[in-house]
Amino acid sequence: MAVKETTIEIKLQNLKSNFKFLKSKINTDTKFMAVVKAFSYGSDSLIISEELEKNGVDYLAVAYVREGISLRKGGIKIPILVLHPQEEDFNDIVNYSLEPSIYSFRVLNLFFKSLSEKNIKKYPYQIKFNSGLNRLGFSENDVKQLCDKIKNNIPNYIFSHLGASEDLNETIFTRKQIAEFELISEKIEKQLGLTIKKHLLNTSGILNYSNYQYDMVRSGIGLYGFGNDVKFKTDLKPVLTLKTVISQIHHLNPGDSVGYNLGYTAKENTVIATLPIGHADGIGRQYGKGVGELVIAKQKVKIVGNVCMDMLMIDITGVNCNEGDEVIIFDDTNYTAEEFSKKADTISYELVTSLSRRIKRNILN
Image (cartoon, rainbow, N blue to C red):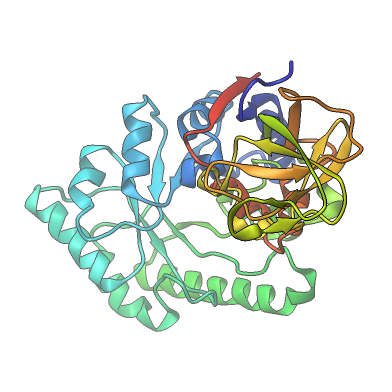
């Protein structure tokens, strides 16, 4: 059915299909962590989490504690890892049964201090190691001091994050990261005298380096339909479709301009359509001035002029369409978010996570 306003369609059947495909790449006893941060990559965190929980996912991961609290308040029961906890978060983490990722001695001390104040001797948490991405994480040199601090409260998992697992031209870098993580794991297990569960692989890691799945894998973008490689295009199906409608059509004469700052000036008789979506909805100004393309009546048309906050304009000269007709910004088959975002030299991650929550969401099973 055609939409009547700007709408994001969330296709749960595609989510389930992606989950099944990614699970097929790992052993049956390897756990699966679904990354649902950033409003589940622009969709709806609670809807996505409920569906994944129902389908047997083992863990969820969010970036910030408020995301985890929202899921708990929505009724999600399975473990939730908070990837980037801050100083003031640990009371909420305990109160809402979340697991923090501990990535530095400062954060570790704050976490243990919070547990001590609550007279909690043991609490589930995970430790992140930096294996070469150089964002967050303890280093190999920290292992001895770290083990002295955690020997009475052992983490559920240790983990790291691959920086270029999707790029097979960077296999040497990825292999170096894997070797670094294995070295760290050996050192920490020898120091503590026990085996600790581990996870390392992200979506592209699952697809390209499945031999290193350890005890659990993590997937974010893959669950939402993107595998960072064209060879997986038929296996992973985009969960999100973004559609809008034509609000009004204008007929321009040569010399007429469109939008703010005369962003476009007609050189000949031109037909322009105005759409109710703009940079406040996640379609940034970089898509303006002929860069971005949309689909109407099965034809690609260009965005003209500057993208406005709540509107953008497209050139529909020669296209058989009317006010109220549906326009596809991206879909799950012919013109995906990956293809749309490439027009502005960016990636699907940036596009979908920028989609405004004010856009109507339709859940399709």
